[in-house]
Image (cartoon, rainbow, N blue to C red; front, side):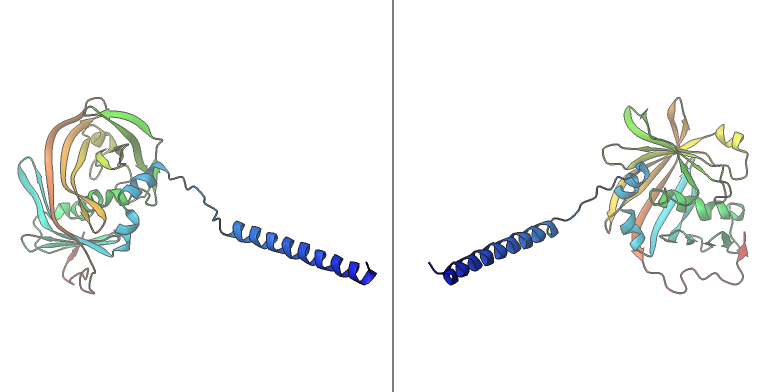
Length: 269
């Protein structure tokens, strides 16, 4: 066999081996690139609740509108149409008697002839907070305890205590104890105190609870259409029902330039 022939065979073999190696290397790279890196995101207990309420979907809408009737002791306390920005920075309550309450950030305004003007700030923020509560759990200034397991009405709940940093909102001394169902992470009850116009000690001597029920899906967001208010204590749990709320005609809306425009003659509270 000639030297030239031998040399030709060697060159061919080297070319085959080289091509094979490059092919294997290319396939390996393609295989590695086709496998995405998946990171497991661990949600906090609060984020788990917010996720159950589709908070991101809720906030993707600009505003929410609904009719609300609130009663205590068998007497109607408030009846009106409520419109709130989903980020809770602005709101409007149109009462059935034709008077209005507005809030814009920390400022509250009401009609000159509002009957219960002393409760204007309370009404401006409280019912909004109860309505949007599941989407406000991680607001700035919130402080959460570790999760505990509690029994309420013969049912086991995950419970967490919510307090607030100083200078958070109108009533930073308020606190809540949230009862969430471990199966679906929805809030069934929240115990609370109201410290507006009273001391913390006085408020803690008369705690209450709100119960959320009759959830309906509104464009992918669960909204409780019935609330009940209870007497409550840490040891005895829920007491007698003292009030209730009915919500209807819930929808997400796009506000106009006039929706939250406050009339010039309105009184700042």
